[in-house]
Amino acid sequence: MKDKQTGLTLATSVYESIRHDIRNGGIKPGDKLAFDALRKKYSTGISPLREALNRLHSEGWVEREEQKGFRAAEISETELRQLVSSRILIEGAAITEAIRLGDIAAEEALVLAFHRLKKEKRLVDGQRSIPWEKCHRDFHIALVAGAKLPHVTAFATQLFDIAERYRILCASGYPERNERDEHAEIVDAYLTGDAARTLALLAAHYQVTMDMIVQASFS
Image (cartoon, rainbow, N blue to C red; front, side, top):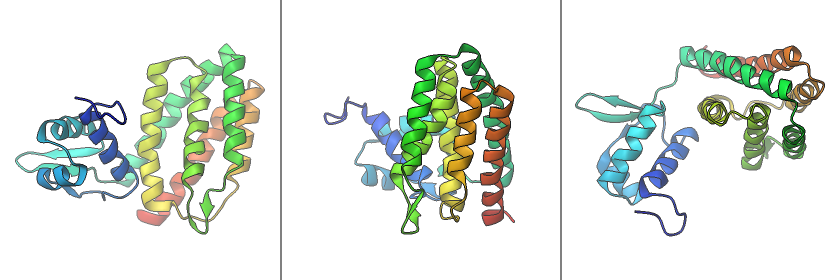
């Protein structure tokens, strides 16, 4: 059955809603995901809800406990460090391939994504900027999309979203830093065809954010 307004299956619609709430802190790490409460909150039935939770479990957004049901996945410094290492490894391979291919359309898409990103402020009146977050996501996905490997891009997107959960929960209000300059240097290295420098800059970019999160929540 499909939602008439979105065209999504009910299970996909519920999946997207719960995932959004976990990612953005509406559902906190470790929160119990009781079926009755979720049915009321998301106006859905048991079957779509169960399908959505199983999918979220397979992607690491929720944890299943024997005889106890589901909970929102916990966060930890160990997982964060593994996540950053995985992103560097996977995105690094994709970016290296993208630079090797040198696709003009991919380069143009990256330049456009960066242009849109630098027009936005990360914080507005001290609060998260949703337009900046969308542009930031688009920018990082554009970096890997030039490899023309849809499955890799999809996985990189999934890892980005999990990493964003950490940033939103732990460090979304950290002071402004030279992220614009960091992004600009990454784009410049990419466009000049210097894969090694692009990857080094990307790793440093992720390291700064990770250090802020660790200091804010795990120190």
